[in-house]
Length: 116
Image (tube, rainbow, N blue to C red; front, side, top):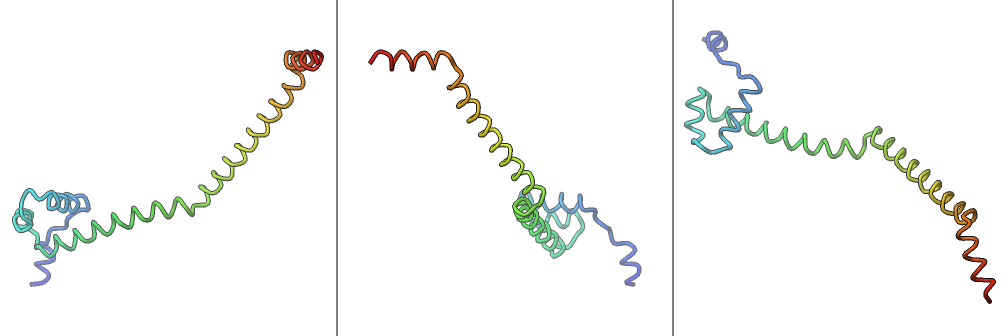
């Protein structure tokens, strides 16, 4: 008898399970009606629902932890810091070098000091 039941039992794909759980979460029909229509037991629906929600929580939590500890992210942050430092150094060199070489600034300072 068990062999017959196992052979005739419908196997639901992950997509089908998700669709059934989402239909239940929408609340358009009662869970009992949804389970009758899909040919599954309510306990099976609730176990799928629990798995679905726990997997979502783990996935969301895992993404945040992975981003914070990933070696690739750390490398990218270090590279960004080095690039920011290089831009700051070049900006300082440009600003300090141009004020000494810029004739308009040099002439402006001589005329101000020469007038005293």
